[in-house]
Amino acid sequence: MNKPRELTQKHGNYRWTILSLVFFATTVNYLDRQVISLLKPILEKTFSWTETDYSNIVIAFQSTYAIGLLGIGRIIDKIGTRLGYALSLTVWSFASIAHALATSTFGFGVARAALGLSEAGNFPAAIKAVAEWFPKKERAMATGIFNSGSNIGAIIAPFAVPWIAITWGWQQAFIITGAIGLIWLIFWFIFYEVPQKQKRLSKQEYKYIHSDTEETLNNKNVPVKGIKLLGFKQTWAFVFGKFMTDPIWWFLLFWLPSFLKTEYNMTGMQVSLPLVVVYALSSFGSIAGGWLSGHLIKKGWPVYKSRKAAMLAFALCVLPVVAAQYLGKINPWFAVFVIGLAASAHQAWSATIYTTSSDMFPKKAVASVVGIGSMAGAVGGILIARIAGALLDHYKNLGHIETGYYIMFIISGMAYLIAWIIMHLLAPKMTHVKL
Image (tube, rainbow, N blue to C red; front, top):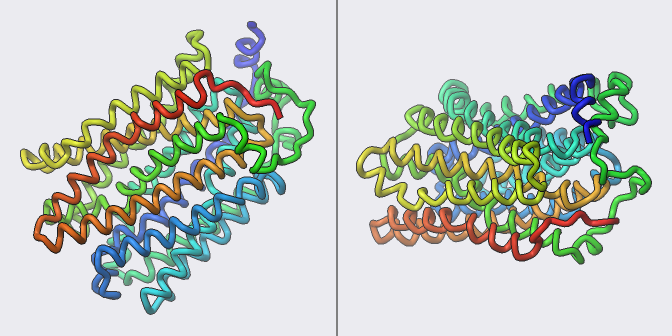
């Protein structure tokens, strides 16, 4: 029982180098996808978009993102994390750049669809990398850290994107952000390899990484067919958890700047500070969320209890978002902070739910399970985009667009508790699947 503790005092830290690469890839991933929400006022004028038109553009991304997730996990499980991650990031970088070439709504939608299809590889590859490089007791923390990269990207974007657009034009915002990912590829190929092949990795750290007693190496690393994975309740627990909660993050990501403009007349650089506050809180939540369940495990809690207790706490922290607009009438910053709390709780939830995939499934199936669950989350994102676009246009035509936002915040506040209940019913003890 003391062996893992002894190993922690002797092993090296190369796995954290790997995590930093995954962190920066996730930062680039979210930097690229957030450009559109920040340029929405400019693009609305350029292409004469309505709220429904904008939601259709979001759906173009979400649809191909879902399609990509359906198969990308199995591809990554088959060709490996190193090549799979690099392929995904290369394509999404060029897809981001392609937005600058669009001269019509249709062309913009095509570029957006290409971005969604290619960005689907980020999280399956990232979670698989964490499963390969970290023992269970560190996976939630590691996931929380790399997942916080999404918030860093979201923090950088409000400052960089409007400034680039004002200075050089909206096309350059897509070109510059897209090109950043190509630089990452150099470092990825220099430093990444699986632990079994990584010469920079010490024997002590290798043993520590593989110190989980239930993890065995007697199974060949052959990817598992998705149809087989659908036969397990554990898969469906992960699927419903993502389906119910991912859409809330998509809603905040794509509509928060528009909400701030509609409710408080914030435009351009005025939106930057509130967005930075929201995503800074999200970054804190991602790391703290990853830490909490790991802390409970170290205190002797069973893995499944620590994950569920943490996720219930995060679900409760989202609830106050239903009162965001009421609080905003007192002071706009009250709305910003309560939305920031919800975003923070979401990222904490996200870091933890991702980790449950590697708790319940062997490493050879992790990317596939994450892909299936993330696809469900993307489908939920399509539905939320359609609902948001229709609601906001309906109430905008009636002169009461704020009512549409009221409804969306109620949906956002309740989604996590419902998801937690469904997950608990499907996988009470998150039993590990033998494949």
